[in-house]
Length: 229
Image (cartoon, rainbow, N blue to C red; front, side, top):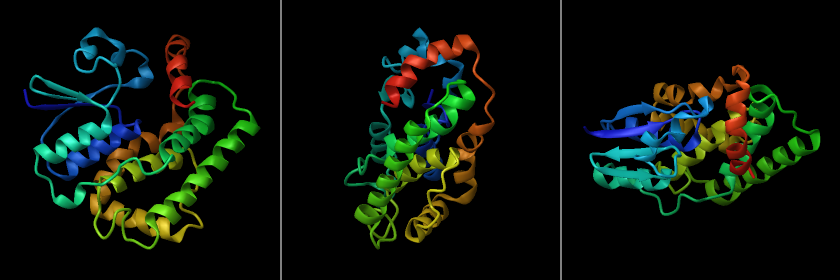
């Protein structure tokens, strides 16, 4: 058995891994893990791949690996991808947390879990997102073509997949931010528009999710609350 990737494309880290592998022609077997079903990743079988029972996860023969940055760097080194992909630092902002919270507070709690979010909490979430968008534009992107310079890197891939969480929530993250909007166009073109759409199809349709079954909701709630704290 060759390389296997255990992914749910609703997950930002999973989308980053998926796009990177596809874009660089890395052969892999996709093992879908539907987190919204509340159970597949908690099974003992999946624990053999990732004892933490989280996605993304990688299995390459007898070797297993968890955590998206570690997986991206493993793929970078093993498959000899172009040097420009290798970043100095993937942990560039608090963007992931604010985008994740925007998705859950605007869409996933009220639509999928049937839980109301107070206007005050939603306003605080969106204000935090605005602060992090400004930092991404002013501190990291500045006047460069990409976050780390003239070429796309994993830093751009991680950031754009984070931002698409907020886009999936209906946030106009690129409106009024011409530098960020132009950067998004460059990143999408570098990845390939078809692959970009394919990877983000799930999150862009999440507003149409059917309400969760009460049993699944009960299983998901503790993990969700811990994830978005």
